[in-house]
Amino acid sequence: MDLDGDGLTDLISGSWPGEIYFFKRLPNGDFAAPQKLRHQDGRVINVGGGIRKSGRMVVVVGDAEIEQTDQKTVVIYNGQRHEFPAGTPVGRTGCASAVCVADWDGDGDYDLIVGDIRGNVWLVPNEGTPKAPAFGPAEKLLVQGKPLRVASGDAGPAVADWDGDGDLDLLVGAGNGSVWLFENVGSRESPRLAAGRQIIGPGASDRPDKPRHGMRAKICVTDYNGDGLLDILLGDFCSWRPGPQSLSSEQSERVAALREKAQQKLAEYARLARQLARAKDPQARATLQEQLQKTLTEYRQISSQLPRSREYHGWVWLFLRKNP
Image (tube, rainbow, N blue to C red; front, side, top):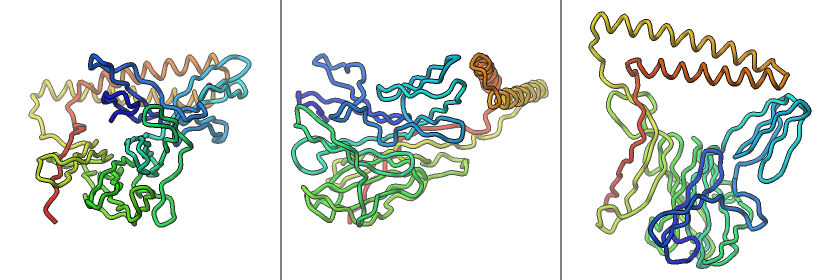
């Protein structure tokens, strides 16, 4: 995908906070440092980003800087400073953007198709040119007049001419590991999406004894084996139960002691978290946050020495398409 029309293949990635990152290809084959893509009005692109109040807390969805002083709490988001009373707790989260680049409206330049953690899929149209992208406001893609949303959330879109009729269809990986097809029943220049149908079922969510494709499906559509049919590569996240380990009596005693230490650290972490929730003084909050981080690090160090009851994976699975 050559986003800036210089003849070199670039990379684009979503992120947990939600911003979209552009990795420009250099003539020597390397990639430049990532840049956040922006709308043409200068705002950073983040389809689920923003600041909202939740009780006493301020919640930031996206990349932000936080300043805590005795006089005020400042959130610096999207180039703007937002001030709140001193001691206001600030929580940071993300919308887990997943981006696909395609000429969605057939006008010769690349648009952005972005999925978010709620299951929405957005179009960020390129209102510029193939060599000078200028991204307009994000808008939700519609299915039969209603916003498209995959029920299990965590939408990961891909675009391809799945049915071979000359226009672009939409495929979406979902949080439960399934993949959905939304056929374009409009035209190349004016896409119109039909109701979705599931073409790959949900993944494993119950820690199977043998590896299976899991959750949070992110997909790539390509003719992997060169047979003229489009296939699906699916990246996942999940866990599975490895086989039981045989331990000597000495090893069993050591494991029991480590588990007791781990439980103590969890209890300490919970106690500190309760204190932090009640604390209002900025200095006290900063001290508690440091203690929380130290306790969490110690817990992870202890846990890493324990036999694993589960192993996490992020594998790529190949689904070959069958002849119609």
